[in-house]
Image (cartoon, rainbow, N blue to C red):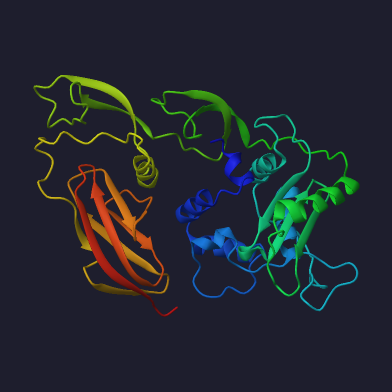
Length: 369
């Protein structure tokens, strides 16, 4: 799907996968710096990116206002009125600080305005909505380069209601107010860090040498990543099995461009009947007769760490490994990494390209900070 779609339509799985790659501790630190989370309580989790933290409307609007002004963050300051329930700080304000890059602001605003990618200028109002668990809160933030409007709808008792949906209860009001304040917004030109280039039609990254479909797109000057999903691999012409230098001799070899997706995406595709990377030739001498073995964590082990991290090391001949924590696919692919994990009992599974699987049960406890 096009990159703006998950943000505009609030796809939860996309957000959770992004947080898993970035790290929840790093994301929590960012939320604190942005003023969205004021008193962190307990260890962060993947639900944090879905709104599992209380936030004041003024603080949320201030963060979106930073997007509107190209990344410059200013703390909210109450000009008149106020309330006893936690309105914006009367003594807040002060100088601006960089919270986002101009390129990030442009791309997010492009998605939230619905402007076609690559347009010379953004058009219209940027708007994001949200609905809390149990439909107790409905909110919307709408902004232009000049104004940011935040609207909350709900019951002061905290009681939920089927009608409390951000897109229906809060968005119309936010858009109407913003249309009075700035009926014809003028957006700045895209920042110089975004330029045209060829991208892989499937991954959206800069096109690699073997990407089968390349389209015109935009690239970030600061991002030097290129698509590594598509590879030219040797396969058996008859069976389609992958071949290596150890098992090519005496076989009819065909060279094909194959997609080597990250483990979690490939597991998702396989679960829906989509073809994944072919298995290696079963008679290859380079393949060990046994499957992967866990060197760490140990079976029944109990691990304590301040950050909830457990070292994982697997002994395996297969270069293609798939990891699953409590039945959920992980993005890790190597045979050695550090796993950020919540306290409790867990089961970690590792499967290789030949389908051989090893499992280990262990417990993680929160250590001293």
